[in-house]
Image: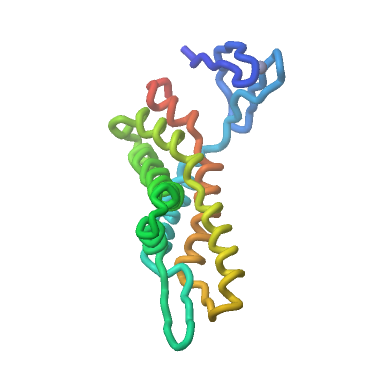
Amino acid sequence: MNALVACHDCDALYRLPELPVGGVVRCERCGAELLRRRASTLDSTLAFSLTGLILFLIANLNPLLILKLGGRVQGNTLFAGVEALAKAGMWELAVLVFGTSMLFPLVTLVGMLYLLLPLKFGQLPKGAHLVLRLVNAVTPWAMVGVYMLGIFVAYVKLISMATVVPGMALYAFLGLLLVTAAARATLDPWMIWNRISGST
Ligand SMILES: [Zn+2]
């Protein structure tokens, strides 16, 4: 029995047909795209997620910006920035930066790997439906890009006062931004839901 799906635009209910690779199902009533069957993207998503995790570690363990001011050289990691915000009493901001730039991107990457690695070998990981829900819920809050913009503004402001050298973490963050976008774009939740419901 094929799965039922509701149009996300007009709520019309359909039982989805078998779809060849490259096929598209559109809503009869409003024309919204209900499903697009891509060639298996599991390997690409897996590769992007793994690369993302490595870049995430590099990005968090190395300095983002290195400041040289009056003979002093100081490199700051992202977490040092979070700590500094908390110490300055800006708790809300510290929590927000920690969540959007560290915790949520990490949950997204680890969650995708948790789902995709076993699926690659034909196994369904325990609690797959919960993990997929968690990944979907958390991903919009993983906003490394916004943080990058903040760094860029700080860089422009600081450059007149001190010598600012971009650290390795900055390049890793830029890479992370691209790789996570690619992982999201190639992720095929339909395939995972199908495996969960045991229909394929
Ligand atoms: Zn519709």
